[in-house]
Length: 330
Image (tube, rainbow, N blue to C red; front, side, top):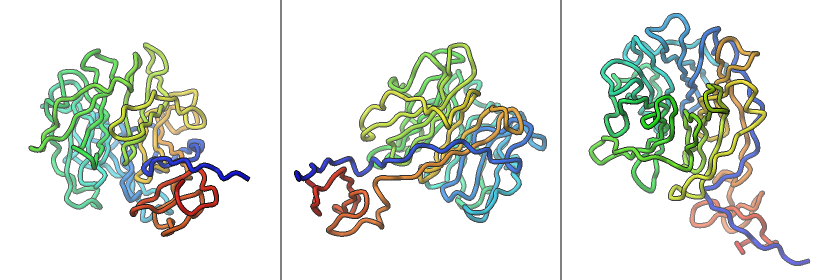
């Protein structure tokens, strides 16, 4: 029988199963009020979100729920307090991969427009109440229009990037922009990401840590506020994004699904939805998936093949579709 030809796929391009049906996080997290914008810490032990439930300081505040381990139930959410929250709207939290910085949207006074992007720093990444006073990200990012929904990409091959939404060109209809961190710590002039933009409203990006997959929500029709979750990929961080694809069922529903946030291992997708079985106007949900290729680096075997045809080469896992019975690529 003829040997199969080994076809290489990039080491940095994992393959996953499809997403599971969305699961409501329940009444401990969700309330009869608006609970939106979930963001999970890197260790999976702190879940942040914004809510207009009673007990806050303004229109929407940040709350955090904690758990002792990833196998434990979530605890009662606690308001993050006046250092972070303002009397106005504070929403859509997201974290830098190292957990030291939180980025968010706010309509607080002192900004450049109706919605501006801010960041806060904490020295201890395990202290959910150690955030310092937020600072405005400045004129490279913010404008007199609405600027919101930021996702921080570490970009090991270059300057860190911030991908965010803005309606600077068409008020009320946001598109995607990208700004790079400058040597002096400021954010540089934002540029459009045309391959991700459409005539519809886009919002709340979440970028996988390797920079090769991005989720966001997009309006389902002009003039309507209802949205679905969409996904785009790219072969490398230097390539343009693919044409976005609707995530579809069982993640999306016939109601509004929005505010996606990927866990650090990219196996859990948190989002919020207005579907009818929830506790209130919007509830927080989660879907999960498994990674098929490549397997974890500690499962690679020096000089040989292991399940799914994963081969260790120069300290990394390189995946091949077929080996032809060999223990080497090709």
